[in-house]
Image (cartoon, rainbow, N blue to C red; front, side):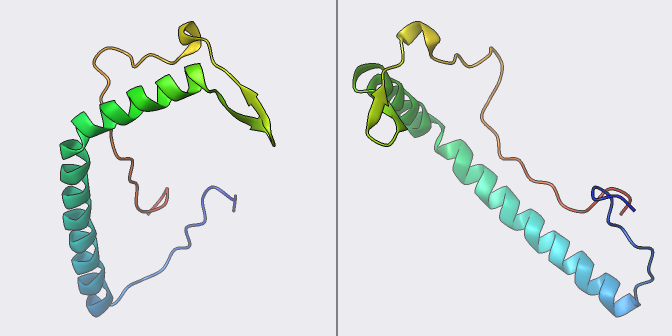
Length: 96
């Protein structure tokens, strides 16, 4: 057994399978709601990014304790074409 795959073969009763199915469906609904809310925040998020980039190129940010470093505008990250912000969510374990 490795640290990555901690799956142990086991059997579930019908009652447990039913509960697990309901739980997964509830989590999927919750995820969809969060994903929708995150998508709605898209325009606001772009403003947050712009404010953050402006702040670190003018005032800088704390590198260590009271040491600040200012980032040059040419060193700012650029979002790749066609890439959208997304929520990452994974459930289960390899082999399950």
